[in-house]
Image (cartoon, rainbow, N blue to C red; front, side, top):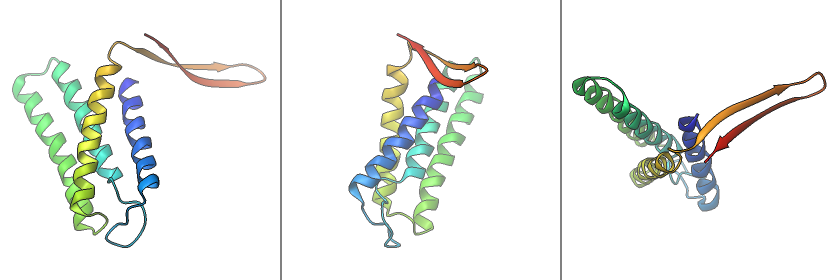
Length: 133
C-alpha cells in the first residue's frame, strides 16, 4: 500500500508541476516539464529497488532485477525524447524528481502502517485508508 501511495503522490505532483509551469514540448503542445512518464518510471524503479534490497533473493538475482528495472526506466526516458514528446532536459528533470521524491516518501512512510478500509452497508459504501504513526 505504501508503494502505491508513493507512486500516486509522484504522479499527482508531477502533473501539478506540469500544469503550473506549462513548458512546451518539442511538438509545441503544453506541459512537458518535467516528463511524467519518466518521473513515474524512475519512482517505481526506485521503489522496486528498495523492495528488492529487503527481499531474501541472492545478491546476483537482486542486482540483475535492479539493473533491468532501472534500464527500463532509462529506456522510458529515451523513448520520450526519440518520440519527440520531450526535450532531454525535461526527461532528466523527470527522472531526478521521480527518484528523489520516491526516496523521500519511501523513507518517511516506512514506519506507517497503511491499510485499505472498506465498509459496505445497506444504504452506503465507504472506501478509505487507515494509517497509524
